[in-house]
Length: 294
Figure 1: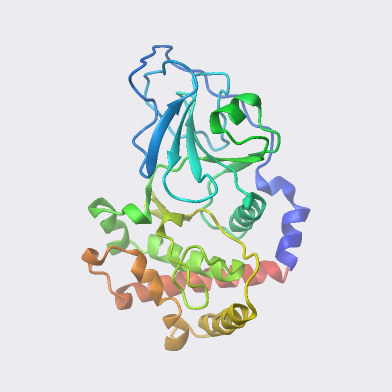
Figure 2: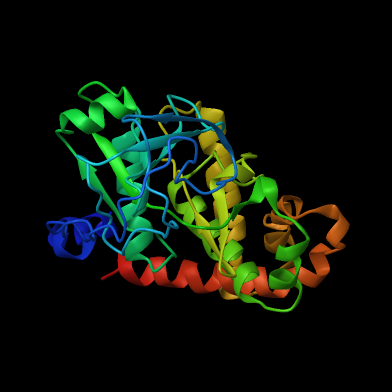
């Protein structure tokens, strides 16, 4: 597929340049009883790699994630995910998400593809040979580690009343859902949306950040039964009819499962969401198509 060739021809667009040094701390004050990590949703425990921790307020890492691996490091593990899940790592000044898994290579390729087709994507880099401090903190052995900028938002498992206005009074997050649906159909991602032909159901793989929806843990298919592949291709042919006719009711019905990811108490019907979701889907499908034909 020509889209993959684009990624290979333009590695500079993947933001894999050498990273700047971490910003200096503003204070050396320490407190052995206070964690520097914010109350990040979905976290199960905290473990320190050194006694004490700095007391100044946290902020998300810069666009290019950097951290002082020789400082007072903390980690907090997400209770979601498999193969170790994600860990949030802090040096008291910056906060990153760290992950390693047998499927890491597939996930990184999917992130790069998402960035190339214009989806909201956090900056990430890969430590192919993690240093001792990182290996010790994460207990990851010699496995490659993906470091990703921490996104201060809510995963879709934990949407609340404060998030409702983003969906009821602005079209951006609904369009983002449609755009991510088009991307998932491209990937044949079965680990996110409960869509016809994909049959996922994992709201933990979506984040609402500043009124925009980010997809995380993008998944490429590994080995699927022939029957699943046939159903996927049949559904893909149906849903892509929206590009020619956004009013195609049968094609739009393939996306109706997106409404299941929003809290029922918000009272958002599929009819009220449909136009924005379909507009996002069509926009993204056209962009993917134009890049694959380039």
